[in-house]
Length: 68
Image (cartoon, rainbow, N blue to C red; front, side, top):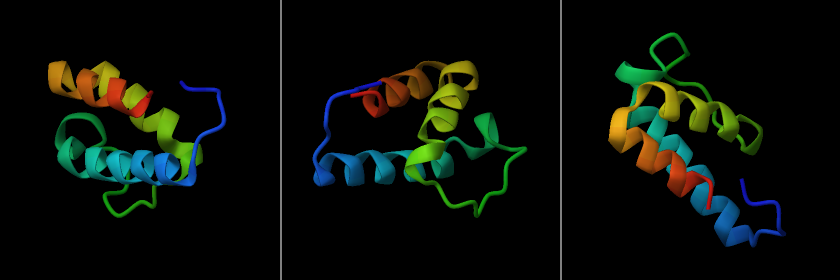
């Protein structure tokens, strides 16, 4: 993950992407998690891990986008 200081716009973009990934990959990766769960910055690593482990190529690409 990017450890440099991130702009507020960049953080908001990552949050929106993580929230959309939870919706898009729910059946593949996050089926055991609450569908209406709130995704915060602290939960982004959880989303990335789920995408990498169970999301296939599309999930892996989305995880890479979240790591930028």
